[in-house]
Length: 214
Image (cartoon, rainbow, N blue to C red):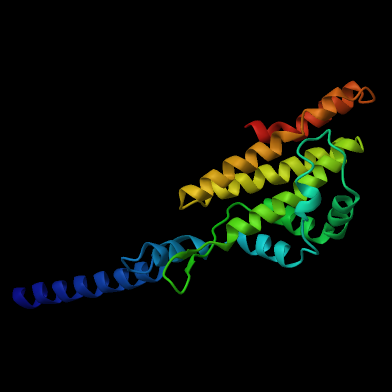
């Protein structure tokens, strides 16, 4: 009788252990030695992922930045080419999708490989292109003395940088994040020099920019 009880206990323990293992396996990462597959399983499918919205923003982008005029504008005080103004105006939909992406808690890009085995990292180009749109938007707003749009553009670039930092699995992602932080802060000091800003306007402007320096 005792032997039967011991045997039954062992069988029950094995069944319970098997159920727990199966359930944990369904929630856990795909068992693989390939770090790319493991990354995708652990991160890219998480909820509240901003990556899909960044990709959608890029797909809705109209036209492209022309080096013939973009290389000539390097600071907030340089003349703004009319082509840049038109380019930003055409892409309000992409900017809005970027804003929606900025409100999500995380950003994890799915990784794939090229036919030659090297990693395919299209998200680096996505973020670069969207950042250029926001940078032009900020530069235009500086020259139009539109402090609200300057702060909004800088905040969006800063949020993109934080997404790159949080979802980085390669050093290049982290480096892109550093560049985005720098671009976000590039034009933000200009409105503080505008004589027409009241003390209340200046305080509101600083409040909008506080997240950039946290």
